[in-house]
Image 1: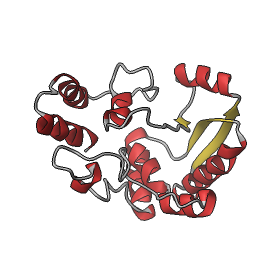
Image 2 (image 1 turned 30 degrees about the horizontal axis):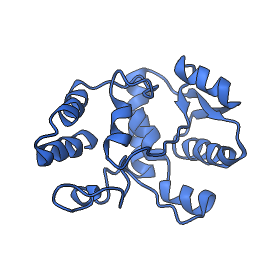
Image 3 (image 1 turned 135 degrees about the horizontal axis):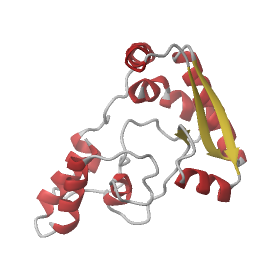
Image 4 (image 1 turned 90 degrees about the vertical axis):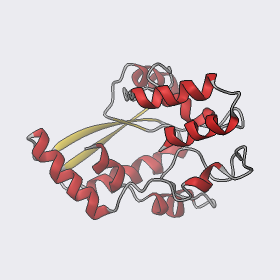
Length: 189
């Protein structure tokens, strides 16, 4: 189901039709031209295009597999977001993409004032949630560590021991900069 939802959203369409500010759609976590590694190359040079979420037709295939596995024909999702004017068009675009590309999935947008959004997000009172992140330091870790199992920013419930281990090694094994960098690349992958 997660793969279906991920593939259902046309990221390039979103940035061109909604943001229209020169942003680029992406299938990765650490952005291009953010930071260079010990070899002087950009973090994205190892996987310049990232990790494709798939096409709209693949989204439908994933959805059909999910319906079978879950024993359902339709699905209603609660999409939690902030109620700011800047997120309303984004929310509607994402909800429409899911509805268009996953027949039988209904998305209800639950736009909340910031404080209530944070409370509901921390309490896992959503199926989908809009989130944004701005880096606070120039290192891939600023984007990656929020997905570790025990990070308070990880309000997804997602947990992966290998990912946690790679990031822990990158945090503590800083003497060998290339090994640290390789761990960060592997974690994102």
